[in-house]
Length: 174
Image (cartoon, rainbow, N blue to C red):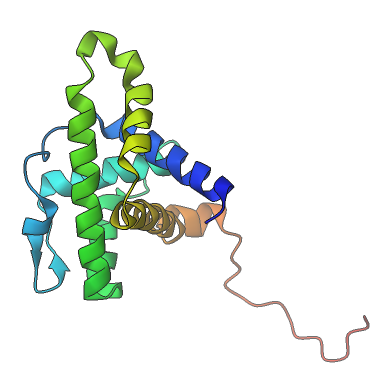
């Protein structure tokens, strides 16, 4: 990873962290508890938490309200298209992310919420993000993009797809 890639990764993590800092509905449960037989079976609050992180990294709700939330899509793609070891890495990264948010939240008071980004940034810089945390953010980002690219809105409104191919020209001049 180059210095620029690390900077981009850190800024993506900071953006996601800022949006999810005050969401505490699933902070006490460990995501690893939802891992059974290599499948990640998250409850609704954890899926909503993943959806918020996804929306922070790739804000698509402004494009159209018809794009489905990415939480369920991400979990489905992890379970059906990734190896069990990758699902485990994602789950460990999710737990590391939640722990980092919990530690950051304890340093921020409600009346001083403007400092949230600087506290998160310093926490991440001090924590030296582990491989699983980086994998978690990377998977969230790529699967969020896949959720957008496979949505009906994107395929019908944004993607220039022609169902009927153009006519074949056998001896076209170059």
